[in-house]
Image 1: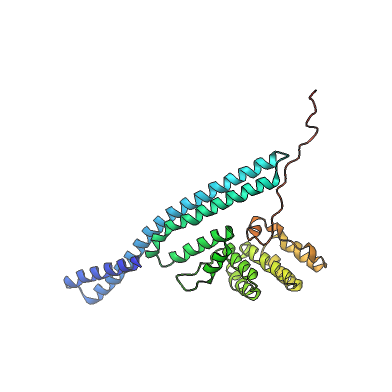
Image 2: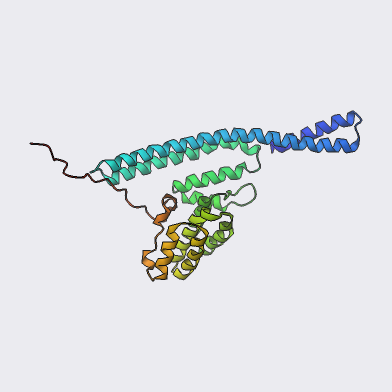
Length: 279
């Protein structure tokens, strides 16, 4: 890594200058180490600043795209008589364009890999998320299969962990999904673990293990404050397993593509639309 190389060179240069000035060995060693640390953090700061600028551009692209889609949905909901399937196709097409833009944008981060030890993993994580949202699951599985300190994706957010669990479930590795859940959920305290609890309980239900789901929901409703877990626990406790639903988890849940979201509803016109008109 270039940052490490520059830091070593800075340390050697400073130590060499001190030796040439007949400075004591202890002082030379101290300033040599200090020079390495100072150079390493300075280079790291400058690199992080440049990376943050690129990442902010990406976030702006994603935010603008989401706002455009929200406006389309609002316009559709406010105009009765529209074609629901048509607007759904339009929104899906818009989403695909935005995610593709985000995926392509990650190429701009590639030059920073030679400056940062973890940049490769950060890029892999971003690409995994965009590919998942594009439903390019084969490529997602390829990224998840990479291992090692500098290759595999960094599971720093609940959605990233949930994507991995969802792919393990789809690939018939339920034990792997449960292992991932147990290993990762402890890092997300409070409501941050909501999606993971919801997903794992859903997997238990799909595997015909409602009692395991019910036991997990006992912990979920205590650890988080989400009403969905209380409702699902009550349903399972009262032999109403068929009413189990994670719909209350909203867009994050449907973003895993395990279930289809409900069809958007249009606002109904109140009263007689022809009232007051004469023909």
